[in-house]
Image 1 (spheres, rainbow, N blue to C red):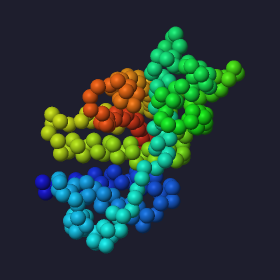
Image 2 (image 1 turned 90 degrees about the horizontal axis):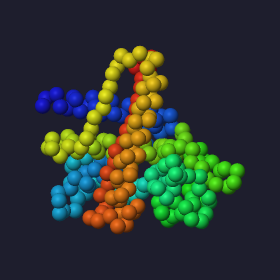
Image 3 (image 1 turned 60 degrees about the vertical axis):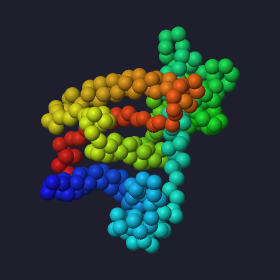
Image 4 (image 1 turned 180 degrees about the vertical axis):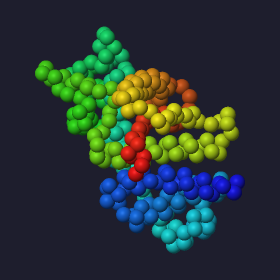
Length: 271
């Protein structure tokens, strides 16, 4: 146990380093990061309150080491989910349903080129799976990121089986918060849970691979990961009250499976 603080400190620095690289590239100074860190400490301390009792300013101050004045100020601040995350979620659900649902696939099981409006149309797809937004707004977003194109006869054709925002877009920076938070939350759950209650958390890693194998590795990872995600997407959609109002049981539960790939050259590792 004597090594626990040292291990945690090393893990914290390792976790923060790539995050700080992103912040520096986007002009976020330390003072601004520090302010967000204070807010996160207060929010987390409030979540860890004694069950049945409202968290007090004094208790949060004791737990976090902040002053009561700082805690009071931070508790009054509202930090809503950024709009780009909602745009991402809606567009991703539309693309996923287009790939998954039989009503929008052709005889070969591929996503159909859809008319803009009418029966089995893009408008109908968005109405069912895109939430309460105009189908034109979703279409414009998918065109913007290169996920769809217009055919000569005026239909909308899907170009990719997943919605991926372009580099540098607001969506990617917003997803940084949600996706990394989900991963860290899963690890946190496993740290405090019994083995039989742990969430699935695995990875495969080698550190002396030959460079020629990397393109094939990336391709294999992309194909197999996409196939797994599409399989699980179909299962989850059947049991989600939004996409299947007839699903029976208590709703409101959230589940996530994320897959990532990373590679590092010897030159990058040496920096």
